[in-house]
Amino acid sequence: MTVAPLVSKLTQIASAYLDGQLSFDEFESEFIRITWPAHPIFDESLQELVLNIDAAIVRYHEDILNEEELRRELASLIRQLQVSVDNDSVTRTHTATTASTTHSPEKVSAWPGIVTAGAPAS
Image 1 (cartoon, rainbow, N blue to C red):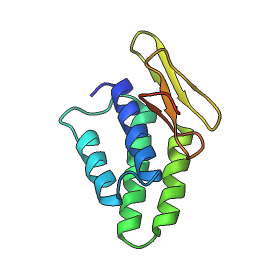
Image 2 (tube, rainbow, N blue to C red):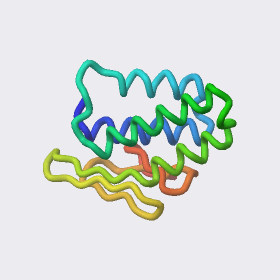
Image 3 (cartoon, rainbow, N blue to C red):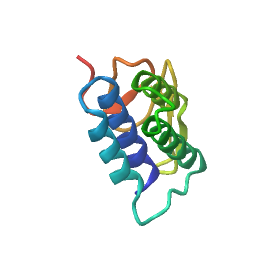
């Protein structure tokens, strides 16, 4: 999977989980499905994000983190995501205050800094 679609899908599923639209099990299943493809992730920042999310999930399963701590860590990881997408020279930056892209309109989640591709926020 190329970087732009993976960034979009990760922010989408994280937002859905943090907003209560996905259960933890649904989030984990989607995370595994989109991050364990046959092809490696070639963007170092994105690879680090995926590994950090995976580590948080493992700590949750081992009862090192409770679900609220997992949610805070996931929200923090997604907010910090800054990925340069080599797709039409687009830079996609997710921070606590901005999201810039030349792709489709984006929806801002109830969790600060989480932005997902799709319909504009209503």
